[in-house]
Length: 464
Image 1 (cartoon, rainbow, N blue to C red):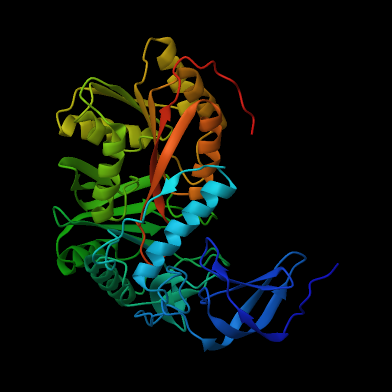
Image 2: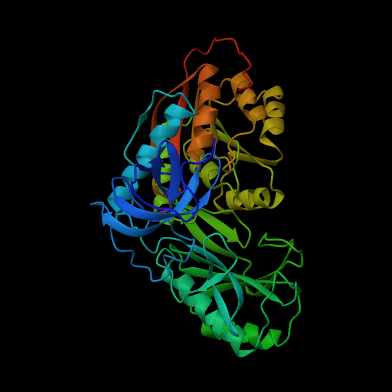
């Protein structure tokens, strides 16, 4: 049976809900049509622009009834840029939407009867990102730096981004002007010619140190010495000027080779009173205000008294590990990226913490080896990538039976899936706390704790 609508057909609809990526949903005889920029309970005339067997896509021609939560987006390129998806929704509306979506996936995927608390938002939900990375290109003969247009590789030039810290905006614009002055050729992904691929900046709010990373296709380029000198002179507070070389035909931003052009190879920042050295390729949370809130929630749920052994299963550069180490007997951190473990060890040394152990490897391989050597975690913390925990790690947790599992998640769907496995294996979760790390986007972080219901329960393997 075909779709009940046709391409280019126009119709009046009522939007029922929002998807996880911010599209409004209208249904025609049960057939969902996804429409950008719509909001629940709004009425609109739409045009169908694409149909598939099970769903279609449309665009708004006219809004005939607006939501009370609709606001005018302050960003002049919001309609074109793909960086934000929810500027047309009031901030209170965004927080309610994220709470609702987390609750929906807990029921649908996790089969969880848990309380999803109101989303912890920001008092000032603008200018929060401490890191900007933008592609560089030519548009109408002009060197531009900005974000990609939605569902394309067309660069939207911009002078300012309302979710980036202003220091990042300023550094990118000053750098772009200098590269344009010296006619530095941007990389073209079609012809694979050109030198300059991306610009990245990091700004540390607690120290006000700034890093600029230039991603190029080769280590040397025309007028390099003059460009480096002008960048140092022009950009206020530039602590670290770094070049990354990426000659590969890929959409991955960084290559393997990194060179320090001026200053230090890192900038310093603090979280929870702990100092961190952040290099060009370090993973580091991009919202410093909400990171403090997220980590405080994780520490609260960990319930540490100073006597516990803790394992941090995706430790990165040790940001959560070292916060835990302030309140635990000993923390073991494991991470698959060797550079991250080097950074974690350096950060432990920097903070004179000797109750931490970091090891490179897969969590599902390293943790059983620790367990075999007598390391028994009272609390296990996971902060996995969007794909969630590896199945082998979940089975390791069920064999090791730590008293508490604190789960920090950037993807509610995989959190719900993994919680189902752990609760089937003898754990209980009562609340999930969403934290708005990325205002005006559809992303939401969550943190929860799973308590071992019966420590003597025999482990049963679940392959769900």
